[in-house]
Amino acid sequence: MDKKKKENIAEYVIHLYQTESLLRAYEMDVEELAKNVVDILPSTDEEKLALRKWYQGLAVAMKEEGILDQGHLKIAQDVVEELDVLYARLEKEDEAFQSVLEAAAPHITEYMNLSNGSIKSRSQVCLNGVFGLLLARMNGKQVDEEILESLNHFGNVLSYLSYHYRGID
Image (cartoon, rainbow, N blue to C red; front, side, top):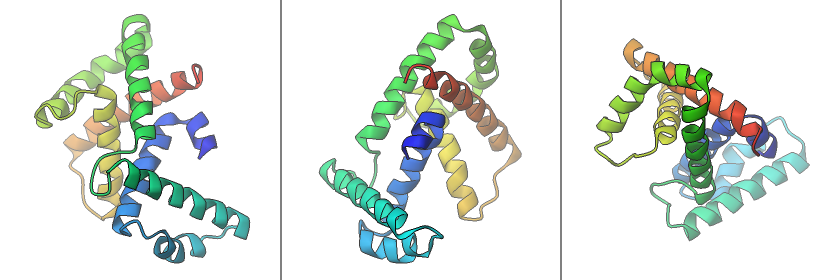
């Protein structure tokens, strides 16, 4: 996970969201999750043990943070806040990012409005959109072209942020 965090921070956050969902699906039963997921991976015993410990640590954190049913881990939310700061800086200073935003802004605004004020972070909107696409595809659901266009713009924003995040981390 540390490698993913260093290489692509957006993928790291989305992976955390996916892991939260997986732990919820297994009702925080890490042993059952390990039996059905970790143990069947083509990995060494050492890698499997590390993965079990990682899942266990996240399950404990989710219990401690009171997010067993919904919400995101503080470590993920802290990164989103860092991305928001970077977003604001790049929006003011970086012409290439301004160009990316010009294309993405209507889509971001639309999805923020659809959230009825529950999402105030533009970075969070982009992350939620891409994560939602991942979930839809995992569940075999079709996604309309119009939605895919929005998500493509979200992906462009997240790619730009991830690239520049590496420079500040």
